[in-house]
Length: 254
Image (cartoon, rainbow, N blue to C red; front, side):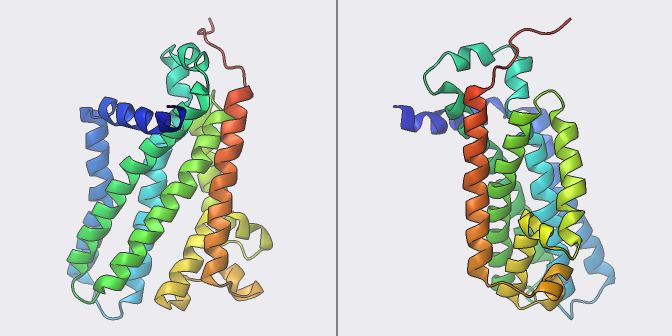
């Protein structure tokens, strides 16, 4: 019974989140990259295809996935605290960690569906020059981005439940879009660095490589995948550990 609870929470959260506001946000996430690609398609040549692929990667696996997870994964704990429902979850055996995992899967499902839809529409707009390989690689990168970044944002939500969105936005701008572009060893610990490495490896696009790879050398795809898997498991493990041992306030402060 306990093992199925995350999926039960996921089904409940998916049903509860079918509101006009969230559906509208889903369509906005899809429309954002599609509109930009369609605009570029009308004024820029298709050949060479590499700049189009790098643009699509930046728009979807990075921007769309991060924006979606920022909205759906980060407030996993704060929404329950604000709704005064946390005390009921905390009283159930393994309730805290099961709810956290369920909300994590819900955020991944919402964001990934928008990302894959956007990738598919963008590839269709670009045309046959994009090819199946680019569509497949972008979809895989979107999957990896969603699972890894969702674990990160859930952990941020657990640690900084009072200033959740501010903390998540600061991390995203300072680390994922700041440090990950700096040619230093520290950026190898960022998720976007690993995703760009996989894009360069799988598509053979040297322009996709970060400056750090050019300075310290490129790593094989297996290394990037192993690090992403380890980061995701570690972040989820730390989040689950913290959420089961942190005493959150159950009453609104005056």
